[in-house]
Length: 491
Ligand code: NAD
Image (cartoon, rainbow, N blue to C red):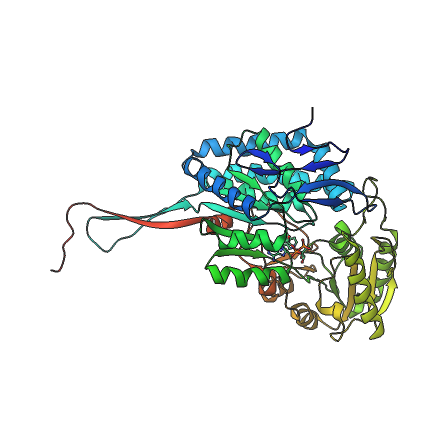
């Protein structure tokens, strides 16, 4: 029997919209193709929401908030834990979707799924800890307290690169706090959105608590921003789109959070274990073919070890397996789209034209880009400043940690940073002075946990996602007082 979430009349699955607990076609019956980045084939289609469907999704979420917002902590906890169970049972299906839809290599897809189950368990564990406080008073007989209340309808806009994880992280914590949700997945990865709805539905989530409306980004985005019933828009994606949304949010005085792009620096000091630093650096740039917001795309190495580091890092880059994402041995799969390949080509041409040297890589076969290492990169080059979102990294020789810090901070971005050294004094000093939301010592820049305050500074965003810091965004505090006996008024 065909599941309710899609039609498969012509042999290709056409996924539906999920609104108010029902799987629906768009009133315009508009569909978009989903292209498998690994081979360019159309492997599925998705119904496209227009204004009517987005409004219907907000209606459903608004209606469902009445009971979900007042539900017991134990009810929300149960649904989140049950969804984690459903995901564990349906891991193979989700893994295959991530491979086909966004070119996740096999092991990255499994890592993403494991993160999501952990995230749901973590959010379930937090449900009973969304607490207010009592406060001291200066007025005799008064009891003063703050309570945390869910906001209402939260809208999430998610990117393509880890579509399951980045959507689920938003949804899990929002639902845990008692909010209802409307998800607009990326137009490149809408099926992950449909699958998320399907998983929650199987776990017994009441109708309307989660709604999924893929569609034209500007049209859906505008509807979500303009509707006063949407109390928060939480966005993850590029800085370019985030900036547009911030302008829209100002127009409607909408509360919003932005998790955006990065040009994350890794600093390797002269006392580092070079082989360890090489492994960390390689993981930090080549995971998911460099399509990770936290990727360490700029590596500063102190002069005394620069040549050795470069030699070993280039040798390692040459051995990183490029291949079809279904192969369990592949590390580098396809980039998401052809235009991304052209974008990186143009960055490399610009860098070469201005004197950079390609130590290895620089070529691609279709969307499969070779691991690419550049030296001689200077601030005149685009690649020094711009995010590549591909397996491309610049190695920069620095005289000391001060020069490394100056180059690390010489970027509009500020998401993640890392320092490899055994000198804890320097590591702590750099950690405090690096202009980034997250710093990791003796690690690469890519690391994440559901319960940590994840987020950036500068053009990488504001607002934090994860655990307790999510409550700041996802709940509002209300101050309540009770007067015991009579207050004395001056007149
Ligand atoms: P993107 O900005 O192109 O798209 C992100 C989302 O915004 C998509 O759902 C898209 O449809 C939507 N969108 C685009 N235009 C819109 C509009 N006018 N109104 C409303 N929505 C609109 O980003 P992408 O290419 O999907 O993702 C890659 C980017 O995301 C990179 O820059 C990466 O660094 C960043 N990213 C950041 C984090 C983080 O946590 N900081 C995590 C993952 C990815």
